[in-house]
Length: 88
Image 1 (cartoon, rainbow, N blue to C red):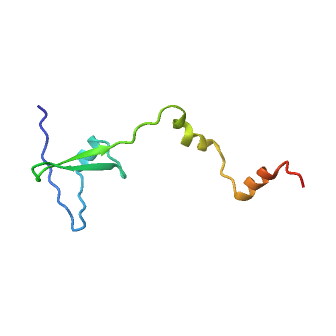
Image 2 (image 1 turned 60 degrees about the vertical axis):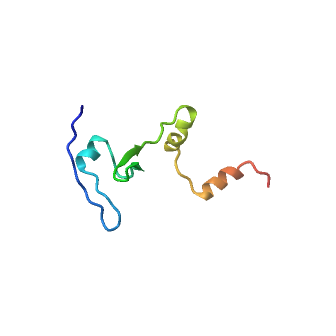
Image 3 (image 1 turned 30 degrees about the horizontal axis):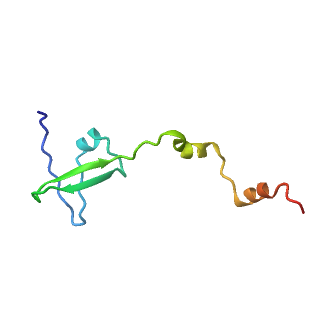
């Protein structure tokens, strides 16, 4: 059986709760980590689960990565390229 240290935090007036640093570090939580809160049947307990994004696999995994190789262009540059070869 794993024995866990008990940590207590308080809810602020705005409904915010601080997660102790030791828990954030051990669970690799960073700013923006999504948490799923589930209330226990007894009404006095809750379970907090980290929501992790599934890793993309296959060709879709390259969608965001490919943009790192492209230089951003202005609208005028796009229009110039699109109009190349048009008859006047």
